[in-house]
Amino acid sequence: MKRILYSKNILIISKYLLISLQVLFLVSCVSQQQITKMGLAEFDKIKEKQKISKNQTHKKQVERVSKRLLQAMGQTGAWEFVVFEDETPNAFALPGGKVGIHTGIFQISKTDAGLATVLSHEIAHVLEGHSLSQVNKAQGVGLAGLAVNVALMKAGASRQTVASTNQAYAALSQIGFMLPNSRKHEYEADIVGMQYMAKAGYNPAEAVKLWERFADYNKKKGKSTTPEFLRTHPLDASRIKALRQELPKANAIYLRNKG
Ligand SMILES: [Zn+2]
Image (cartoon, rainbow, N blue to C red; front, top):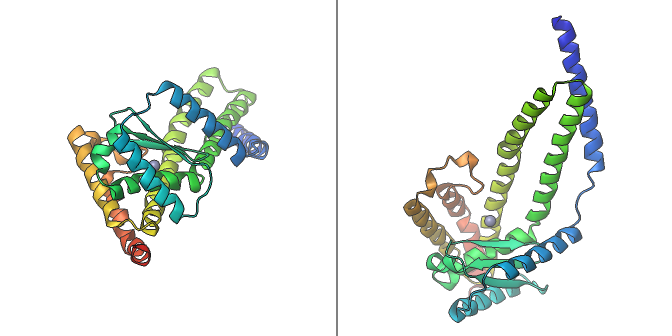
């Protein structure tokens, strides 16, 4: 009996592996072009839905800082930076060089160098192609999940088994697969962004100070109580530590580029 179960399991596993391989082969990656198109369409939607800020001081600061950053990086493409009326301190980037900045971030960014930290982080997400790998990962997880389904169904598993496997799979892919990936992207954008701002002549030590101000804000709001492994963004403390480690490198770039 045990042996029969065992071989049935082997059958299920090998069928799953076979189908997974087929799926991997079939999932042709989403191209950068498609992703850019999606990003532009999404940004248009956001601009329709969300109120665009009329604050001229914020607008001018964003123009000044983004121009200096893009120039230093030799970026000539069609970038767009829009300030949205939203009190949550946040910023986001979409493929195709679209960057959204919430009005709430200015209470934390404070100076040009503070804003340069935020903007260069967002620019880094775009230039490092983070959305592309994220979308492809999401597609991969979704389709691999589907493959588990098909394999189980074919192997004659009960509906309930299929359902619970689905749940487990969804949970696992969320914690074990998707999140570490975006945490990795956050670290990357922090470090690369700090180098960008240094190249543009902004003191990278200000990046550390900005994240410290963010940490203070989060502490006051009680956001830092969520366990780190479940958060998309790394805890502020580990973020600050990583930035401090990379500071000497960025500082050398800054010393070469400051006016
Ligand atoms: Zn980010």
